[in-house]
Amino acid sequence: MRILMTGITGLVGAGFATNLLRSNPDYTIVSLCRGFGNKSGLERTKDTIKEQCEMDDKQDAEELLSRIEIVEGTLEDFPASEMSAKGPYDTFFHCAASVNLGKDPDKKTYNTNFYGTQSALSLAKQLGLKTFHYVGTAYVAGKCSGVVMEDSMPATEWNNSYEISKYDSEKLVRESGFDYTIYRPSIIVGRLSDGVIRKPLAFYRILEFLARVKINGCKKAGLPLNGPFSTKLRIAAGMSDKIYFVPQDYVQQTIAKLFVLPVCNKTYHLTGMSPVSTQMIAIAVCEALKTTGLGIVDNVENPSKEEKLVQRMLDDLLPYFKSNITFDNSNVIEALGKEVLDWKLDLDFLRKMVYAYYKENNPELL
Ligand SMILES: NC(=O)c1ccc[n+]([C@@H]2O[C@H](COP(=O)([O-])OP(=O)(O)OC[C@H]3O[C@@H](n4cnc5c(N)ncnc54)[C@H](OP(=O)(O)O)[C@@H]3O)[C@@H](O)[C@H]2O)c1
Image (cartoon, rainbow, N blue to C red):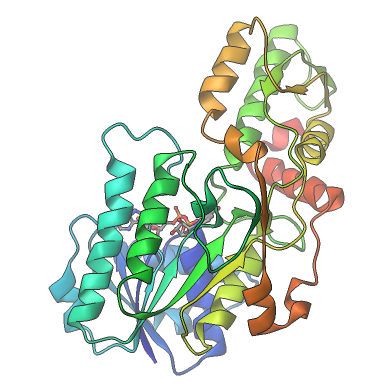
């Protein structure tokens, strides 16, 4: 099978590509990839695949790379004829997107995602493909509450332009006339075994920010960075117990397994069924940073300068700590059996995950 894809350097795309090629020796991939700095898309892909294989503790990067070809380009300036020239293909896996959750005043995030999906669909049509695979997000559910089924799109309000772009893109895919498979991950975090992640995105900005709070506080007070620290910082986040962290290895392996099943217009929640709570996250972070006094509250009255800064810096992430959505997983269970969901995220996992992040990024704090 020859697969045309986008997003191979991403957290999801690299894991998907390596998992899929490893378990299917006759598969090959052609991916769109852009250069950055002085590196071409091809060089960046090689670096990424090597990093992913190292993380998987496998020595097969060269073999996998021998089955990957790259077309240099971007979603905005879609090199359709170059991609077409490397065909024929059996299917399209569209994974690339801007994952910026922040404000989008000039609609850059929206346009990249929506028109990128439109370009991918239009190329798939031109190539005469029958099937289309699309990586969406569980948060097309936006501000819904209650149970959300995999094949439904009940949202009428969203938290940011990213969610709207993914909702509109998913609708494009559903209405395109292709047989489709849609994968909807939730908030991707480190792998199950040790919490390590190849590319910390989104939620991890909170960990980065709290590390900075501790570093600044300790320096000001002349305290050792790895010692106990007390703060009066309050963060206005909800007390949700429906924070759907999902381990990166589950997402990557499950997409690769679902990908090889018959394509029959199904959508899959890659969310797991063991959401964590705001409180559990706060405990894990405070323990790792040996910090006391961090207040998670509904509303911060008379915020200090530092509290205003927190609110501004983390504003785009905080809605996910107020979520009241339950993601149904019936399609995943029907397709792969309930054993695939035989894992649970608990406080011990969060401790591992937070520790793994600080060990890699702020070892001076441990
Ligand atoms: N991470 C999550 O928690 C999460 C959760 C739910 C859904 N998702 C979905 O999963 C998919 C993959 O995201 P990810 O987590 O792997 O994020 P990521 O690590 O940022 O990867 C995004 C991929 O898209 C590519 N890309 C972005 N903008 C592009 C552009 N303008 N032109 C060409 N390529 C572009 C990136 O290439 P570069 O390396 O060149 O930037 C990268 O390969 C997305 O569709 C996202 O919506 C992610």
